[in-house]
Length: 147
Image 1: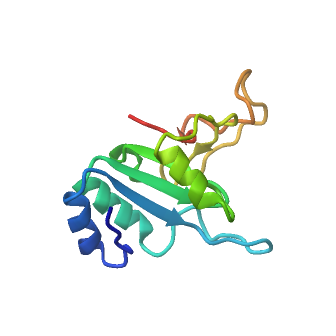
Image 2: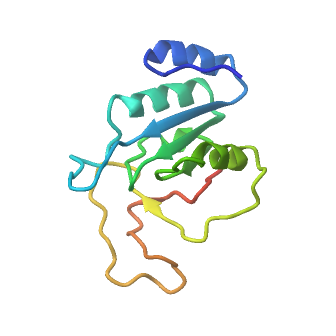
């Protein structure tokens, strides 16, 4: 296993090309009392994910965000894991999910936008939708999505 901090996209791409699997962690720093300017990942993270996924189709993206983010690269990655803000034992939980050690499944599906368009929130979720729903203009990102 090798690590690249992702600061230099070309370096991350080179490592992704030479690897069987690439895992990209993306974060969205947020706190109470401060609104995010938009749903995009900051600091060129979308470009990093896009480039790594282009170099290696077996790319998994782990999102550590407090809410939905746009995923313009969703069609190029093999899976997305939304870890939210995982806390002190988050690394262990993420490792268990990625290695299939954990057999737990998410009980509340979420829908995240695929692009920077505004998604209409339905006033009443359809029957069986669980925790709510966002219009079909948005793409579903369940705890772990595979092609």
